[in-house]
Length: 166
Image 1 (cartoon, rainbow, N blue to C red):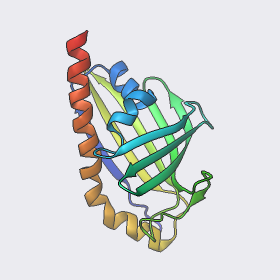
Image 2 (cartoon, one colour):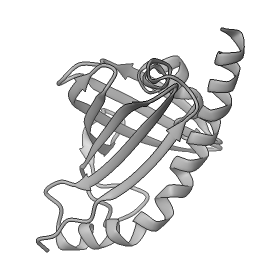
Image 3 (cartoon, rainbow, N blue to C red):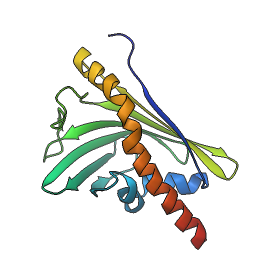
Image 4 (cartoon, helix red, strand yellow):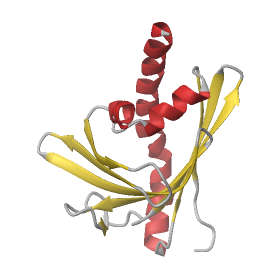
């Protein structure tokens, strides 16, 4: 396949850009909304190009480990990382939850001022993926809004609380 599917999610948050950036880059805040409805543990968060974000999501007796490696960090405008499933030693592995899921996704998040609000554009594209992985990603894109949307709803509430305190 030559044309890679690209997941795109645009969202305007009722909060200033510095606050929205902080929600994405402060592990304390990030762990509250990333992985909505489950426990999110951030084992490492080194916010610089080449730095790693080691993430664990737990629910019941299940867990999912992810390893993200930052490619680009431009405060408060842009985050770019390679997103992968990981084993217990944080090595990149095939997804244990979905056989044909791409091993690496290029994730880009752009933050733009819109008056006193912030527009966020999230994109994800498979990297070095097989035809089966590309097809799997393309098929699953329609459902990805649900997970991100639940996290974004938590962020909305978080921003309301933070703005009320200021």
